[in-house]
Length: 319
Length: 276
Image (cartoon, rainbow over all chains, first blue to last red):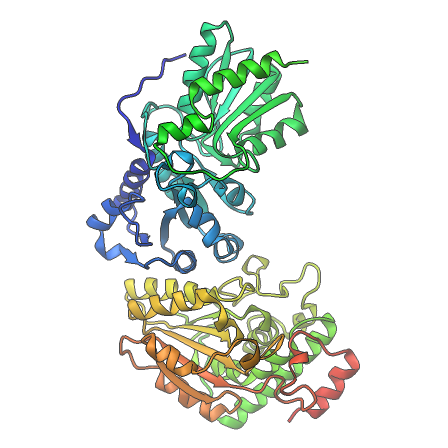
């Protein structure tokens, strides 16, 4: 198994913006909708290169989602992006009915995912978006682990999917470590590191933290497998069931509420197929707050050291 | 075949009569549904499908067709009756309304396969945004078809409608025409008691729209209202169609209790006998 190295930190939103530009250059039917935070969600690259295919709609997320549906019904591939809190909640009924019920190929970008948004605080930190989006029929939910993967998955979402898709990405620069040539398929988890004592299943930036945690656990003689779930829906149940069989212990890690997110999705698979003990690491049913991203990750128990102590506790508490 | 426009008022009246009859029969058969506004909009739908819109019932996805977005999804019975009369599907199928496995869902559902349904709707206040997206795409592609969006007046209380109104004017979408069913009633009672909408025309004018009002139960007036919306002047168009909820059945007319109630089979027969 390879060792993962940070080639230089980069926000996943940059990868999303680059992915939209890549796809936009190849697909003239791709259109981008602006919700007043165009640069902040990484779409300024596209807007600058293709001003005729960029439509500003102002601070009006509900309308944005509906306009996207209308474009999709007319054969366009619309990309609508705003902060994940607003995409998933402010416009959720429009996404449910106009987009998902009509099963339209709309690319919804959810920026500012997780607590690591930092100083903007609770209102801007998307912590419930996975729960909302994965509950909607027809929706695909993507959560890339770094900028390289965000770029790749964004283009794949444009080219390979036919229905609605939500792509979650963050604001803070995080390690960019994935090999762009690694086999990546929407709907398939990625085994990043082998291990037999416990399996860490993570999504988004938490994949990097889980990898670091697994190296630290190795020093204590604990062999931790690491799986990257970049597609939360449809979830790769095969790789999860195999992990449950092989390691008998599963720990999930996400920058999201522990209710309804990756941990819940994994638990739905594990409990119905191969029940083993699980630990769900995430934000514990509270709102976020202001602070530097690294301070917040520490406070909310989401960095590698916290994962290590949670895992050790979990394994020791094992009856 | 592209539908031939009818300008003969007596002929249009006859179609409206038959559409009303089928609304009542299908609702009675379903045992539930929205009678009042469906009857009230029968004349507007007759004009749209037989005198205004370019469309082809044999080729529902004809790219040049005008689109009809039913933002007020609960008046599905009038849309279904108009589609059936235009030839999109057999009229007998109207009697499957709201039944298990039917293509005629309680609110229009695209994925159930009924020809002529452009958009699944039912949650109010969403259709105009989708219409704006269709209008942006049409203009980008240099296509000349139009987007007709039918809304209820109570529906205009949804905030998202005004987001959409602002965006249609900002992007100068003169290929959109909204028709508001201005019957001044909603489930809880009069719109003026539930939530005042007036001055409604001024609201839309101040948002940059071209506003026209008409008697929505008078075919001549409806047709001249649509005539005024054909001009491409960079302004989206709206027709405030003043209708009578329940129009055609005197015991139902203007009675908000008939908003979401279906007639019994006996009532339906009595009501049909009252139709003129």
